[in-house]
Image 1: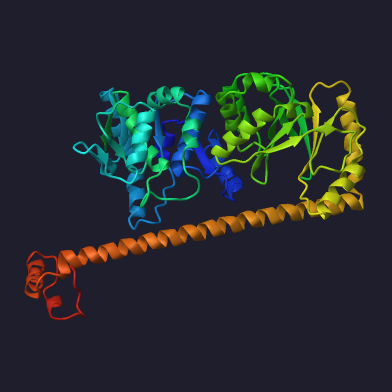
Image 2: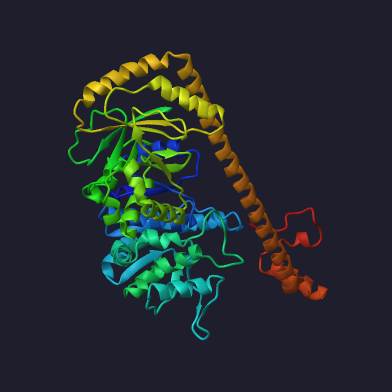
Length: 219
Length: 285
């Protein structure tokens, strides 16, 4: 976090309302980041629900930042590689990587999203027009609902990435972030056997960049 | 706290509430000013010290669209918003209850965000009725009968009606409010020494503790459910891996597998001695 702090970021944190230790957590965060903005939301949509609520706050409070880095305390208990995934996803805030990412944005104005290379996935089968995931039908429903025109179906699995704030600003000024959040599932769940709107939104976040003519890059 | 005092303000912008020690209650009957400033102001307040009041007759009808409701819901996500048993509390002036459609839609919108809200209807501080388990009073003078309110609260508690907190709302700028408030303070100090209050406060603390334990229990039940789900998924993954291993490796002829081990030795993936003994180091670093 030291490298991030050097950039004087606007820190927005979402805590789960159901967590009993929030008071202590808030005071601990405030001692490290006195200017941090903290919200507490019910356990809806897992990290995606939190990210939508934070985006809503970012827009409503008219905060200014060129780039947004989405991170969360990923805990994939159901997956043996959960911990190593987490470490790899967090590499996007390592000092060396931050420098490379910012250069990438400066050198190519079309760069919209930057995430860890290993996690950039493409589930779309162009021949059959099907996303090879349990979320296929829900993703198609959302793409149609938000009228997204897509040529690139890549996304950052794990939902930790850098994104130009203007991409979010443009989309969520038309579709309220809280209204998008309404569709998400409550509690803890996975998309292992059945698709969810939450896991579909994990992909849609990245599709927003492509819809607006930006590209995804890996580091 | 069993007894909560709120200063009803119409805006944060004039800053005249800075010396107030209780909670701040924003009257949404009038325009609350720039929302962006409001959200940032709320970040600077301590936890559980802010709430909203719907008071004016027409405002809800005029502003009852989805965006307005979402602006309100964003307030509930602030750590400074007052929650009773994890439910954001909204104070409601009696005449606003006419707006049942707005309240219903707001409750519905909140449910879609995973929140249930608690509407508390305000009463005149002079009225002590005993038919409701809500104890929310708007103060217009110091004529508050604390003893009757506490007695009423206790009878509800003893009847297992789970009465919530007692709230007093004082409107900023109300004529004579300062004097009335000082008088109330005196009465409250005297109340603290009564047996009735001591018992009520103990009962309230007990009620809060039970709520806390219930919440912890719910979380543990949910965590246990998750653990079982993750365990079943991991079991399936293990079974899939074993099946994969069987089809990819186990079904090969023995001579082929043995040849494979020799190739591993030749390529430096395994020690030569491990071909003949299980007691030596098998894999090279």
